[in-house]
Image (cartoon, rainbow, N blue to C red; front, side, top):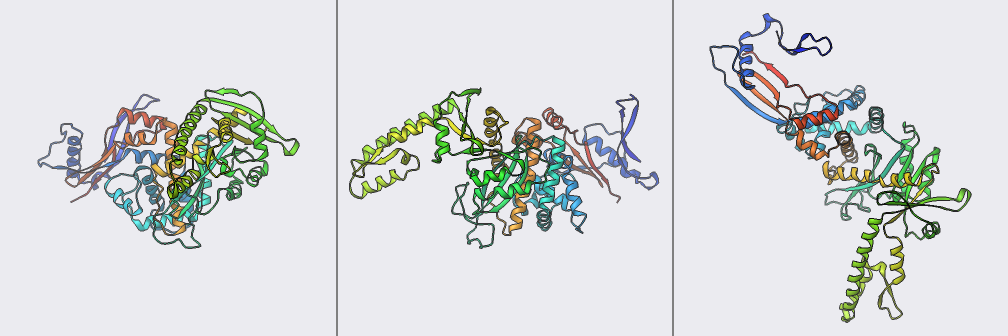
Length: 531
């Protein structure tokens, strides 16, 4: 006894039966139950009952859960072999809990409704229908996180290699940057903990934090992540990053880093084993080579709208350094207008300062002298009075709309260098997604390994989200809003339970086709319980 539907074979044109569900042998099946089930299904889909029965069976709708976005995430999870990579590692251990399914539930939660591990339990139970997951228990979640961190490097590498093959990732340019994420806690962090106070990119120096590093492709796909103690400086992490990526199938890699990583030691590290770099350079660093590069005459070449470049080589032989000076005319105008507004305000503050005396004068004087914006335009005369530094104003004018890039690769054109560095915003976009979409911060985990596991869950979630965005050309917010409208409805008629999804809308169909997935089966589950 089977529930089947006739479909025409697209090749032969002949009708053939597609089996949705097998109930069992005829002599083992309760036929009255099947008749009641057939009647309840007909009533549920709005058709007139085809089977006459002597008794009237009431159909009840038990629940309705979001289903569409979870289906998308699970399809990506399977396509990239994350389930297989985890199962391969799990085969070496004896877990009674479905660890792989539990990990998927936590990854999906970061993308759909970020919450604490305890809240995930109620979320799975009441709000969302995730394929293959009937329930989630907190203790299983923590056990799964412990397993994840044990297999950290192996899983990251296996996932990368699978994703690289499927997406044909371009990894000639690999972008790297760091961010920080803080903890809400009253106690002081332990000395050996990775939770430490340091330079906070979240502007929360009052809270302990960790430093997080991401390597991202030019398409914004995160291929590797790291977690370091919160007092780790950007300058110190490049050797580990370079070492950890040795042996990965990355081909010819040019690492793109921001100005915070361009120490001579780091740049030499990036050139080991034939590597190359594109690095931002601080124009106000005072380095002789930088001053030389900025002072060199020459015309800018327009390569794109609002993008002009000028190549400068400083030094000779092995000591030569190749720079690309980039100028954005629109940004130059904005810099000019901002500076004019600052100077106008500064003139007003200086005239106001002359009217003050005593403590009021001293406080106002110190406030101006230490002001983050104004101080670079100020100098003191012989009497200690503040004046606008005209030389500093001219020096600032010279840098309007410009930024300086340094590279070790002579084969790249100046345009490619400029555009490659410009794409560093992909890492910044990844960090924004981590902190806003996945709600990485604040973290409440106490153990270091759990903190690292939490970041890994966010990395896996970001990987799935970025691929979905790239394939559909939509933001994750748009995808989530559209696909969340697809629900899985559970209805009960007598002793029979049916789980059926809502109809696929044209917009949902468009997203599924862009992702390369078929629409989920209409009937997800049928259970027939004997009395």
